[in-house]
Image (cartoon, rainbow, N blue to C red; front, side):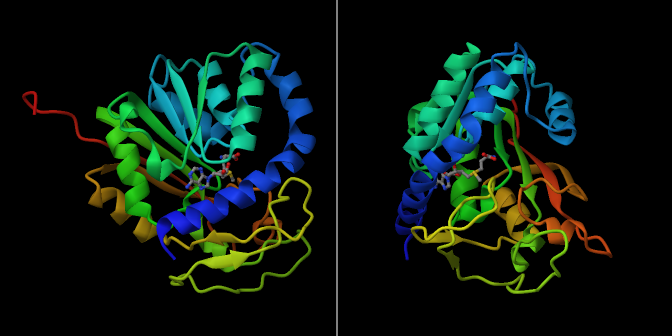
Length: 270
Ligand SMILES: C[S@@+](CC[C@H](N)C(=O)[O-])C[C@H]1O[C@@H](n2cnc3c(N)ncnc32)[C@H](O)[C@@H]1O
């Protein structure tokens, strides 16, 4: 299947999930964002963003979902903020949350691979957080979009689940770990159990296509588009709503990672 076929199929499945997530999240998020300065970001993400001097910076978030993370980035001091996501149902929720909080962020509904070139060179920081890279059939193509959106000297911040988790079926704390997929798997994982990762349930969903991008794939795809690796840390923190069985496992596996790519600054105007 081509990249476009995969991203179209995934968009349909994400759109299908949007009403369920709305019923699970919107009420409490609207209340949270009505408090001035509210941030849903955890300590790790907040620390990296502050170390990147996010204050006043123009920030784009790729795959922003319902916008709660980007709205939080704005609330900790960012400048112009624009979120991009392919699922119209989630973009609607992001816009509603922005209105509820009186927060000045813009949300654009588009496949990331098709982001309008009008956004090229318009940002100091591009963020990608928690549950995004595995949906991307073409990692270098995805990073290439971030690279073209950044100003020279800008940074791409990635805070993601560790890809080793893709080898394991998620479960409850008491569930044993069952190694299911190879870390070196190339073909997509096709799943029809839905996206109820807040409720922990399943439903018969439209097919979802995800990928195991091993850490070396992530790093080399960034280098391929011209980024320099500025920061990379594998971490023990569990940042999804899913792999509680892995979190409880001893010996401990890496659960997440933080990565900062830098777009080299211009030298002598070139
Ligand atoms: C798990 S959410 C992650 C986002 C956010 N960190 C969160 O926790 O809500 C993944 C998002 O990626 C979006 N997405 C997946 N593939 C995409 C693509 N090719 N273009 C645009 N959005 C995409 C989905 O619509 C979904 O909102």
